[in-house]
Image (cartoon, rainbow, N blue to C red; front, side, top):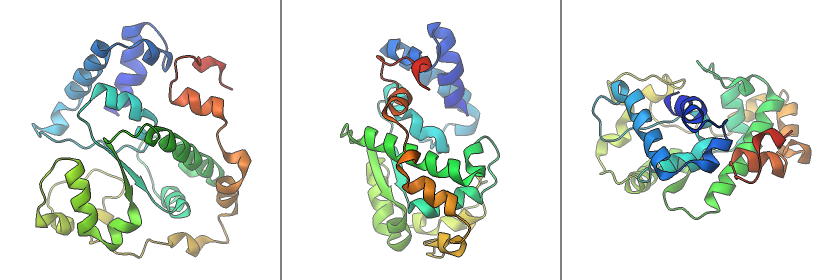
Length: 231
């Protein structure tokens, strides 16, 4: 949670303005300070590594600030069948936060917010953001992983296809799954619950489930819209 701590707590204190309004006034020096504080907070976890992955689900809300603080960062935007994504979240016991994942209706609305914001970020045409298709990774892992590594400016290694053999500790909600090979058993998994996810389907398909434009704009922190004006 280092990034959220810096952006939601420390930067507003530095700027003497609440989040997210402070981002509209942040200068390059402020974003450099954010990067420095983030690296300080993650130093122990990074353990001197030159490459570091931050995969918190809420990072999609922060793509703009991330790229301002880390101009050399690479963003991977993973997309998956919406129903499979939401069912997986609902069945996952997250250690911190993600309270939306405990309610099927909220999950559907949250997913639509995700789609709306990622469409916004991709609309800038920034080459640092790479869309990645989950189903393609499962069905053609080598091609997908080579594309990902090239985007991240990393070299290919055959062990990328045998990640389940890695012995390093895994601290993630999906720790059990990363200890096994890729398979397509989870593609279309939602069909096992199709009679129980009516609220989810409704939230994903109803126009009322789409965040209105004012809320979307507030979450991408356009300076002309003050956060407190959003209802």
